[in-house]
Image (tube, rainbow, N blue to C red; front, side, top):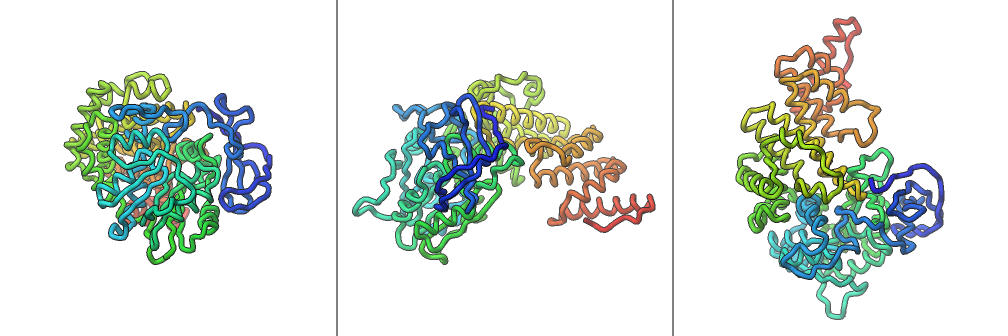
Length: 536
C-alpha cells in the first residue's frame, strides 16, 4: 500500500473541531506513514466532544500527497481539460471513476427521496463529473447548475453537456442571484478546511421551503477493525480534512442555522437533509432511489458506445443490478455489447474463465492493471458466472467464473492500494463471487465447500479477511442448502450447529434453513445424550 497505518501512540493536539466548534485537546487515533507523505506522516485526531476526526496537517495548509487517488476525483494535480473531444484530465482516473468508482446509486438514492414537483432549480456543489445533475435533468426535467473547479467537472461538462461553473463558489450569493429549491453536496464537505462557512453559504442559496442534501464519510468507519475496502476511501489520506460523526454533523447543521434536519447513519456514510420546514424534508435514503437508478441507466446507456468508459460503466452497472435483482433475461443484450467491447478493447473473452485464471498477475499498478483489463472486470465475470449457473445450468463453469471474479477483484484492489486507494464495491463483488463459488462446490467438491465455510466464519481472522456479515449469512445458507439438496446430507448435518448459530430467522427463506439446521443439531445432541438445546 502507498502508506501504512499506525494505530499506536497517544499524542494529543490542542485545536478547535471544524465540526462542532469545541476547542480543546484531541487524542490521536491513527497516523498514515509512507514515502509520499510528510516526514511525520498524516495524523488523524478525534474531537473529545463530538467524536469527529480531523487531519491537522491539512488544516495547517500542508500539500496533499504526490500520488492522487482515483477514488478522489478532484485532486489539484490533475491536468485541466483543453480539448472536449478527449477525456481531458488524468485518463486513468476518469476510466476508474466511470467504469467502476462513481457512486451513482448513492446519488440516485438521495434524489429519489425528493418530490420532483417541489423542485425547479437544482444546485450541485462539488458535482464532479456531474452525474447527479444529469440524473436530475434527464429524469425530472429540472433546471440544473453545477459548481466544481476540478478537471473532472470539465470532462463531465463536455461529455454530458452540463452547465458547470469551474470557479469556486462565493461565500455569499451575488445580488439578484436566483435561489435553488434543492442544493446537493455529495462527498464534498469533508474536503474543506471551514465546513461551517461552506454549509452557511449553501443555506444562503436555498429558496423558501427548499432542502439541502449532503453525504459524507462516517467517522465511525475509522477503526483498526474496519476492512481496508471501507477504511482507505474513508480516510483518503491527504484529501479529507474532517470526517464527521453523526453528532458532529448535527452540530454543524445547527450552528449554521438549520432548525429542521435529519442525519441517517450507515456504517460507511452519513446522509443528511436539512431545511426550514421539517414537514417538507425528503427522505435521504428513499427506496425509490433504486427505481430512479435503474431508469436512468436504461435511458442513458444507449447514448454512449460500450467501448467508451462511460458507456461501459453504465452498462456494467445494469449487469450488476441484474445479478442483484435476478432480471437476467432483460439484461442479455447489454451483456453481449459489453462482452464484445471488452474483447475488442482488452482481448478478454468473458466466457472463458480458464484463460483468466491461468494468466499471471499483472504488475500491481493501476495503469498496468488497466492495460490488461477494465476496472469493472470483476463485476462482469460475476455476471458471466450467474449466466452459466442460472441459464446454462453449468455449475462447474459457473464456479470457475466466480473464482476468476474473486481473483480479479483482489488484483484490482491490490493495484489501487499501490496509490493509497481502494474500492468498496470491488471488494463486495469479490466476496459475492466467493459465496457463489462455494455454493457451486457443494455439488462436485463438498469437502472444499465445507472448508471454505469454516474459514469464512472463523472468529480470529484479520479485518481484511472478514466477509461482510450479510454475506457470511448468505454463504452459510447457500452451502448448507446446497449440501442438503445435492445428496450430502451427512455433511450438512455435521455443519448444522455452526449454521444454526450463524443464520438469523428474519426472512422465510433463511428461517426455513435455520429451522432445519436447528432440528438436525438437536437430533445429533439428543443422540449423544446431551438433551439438545433451544434455538439461539
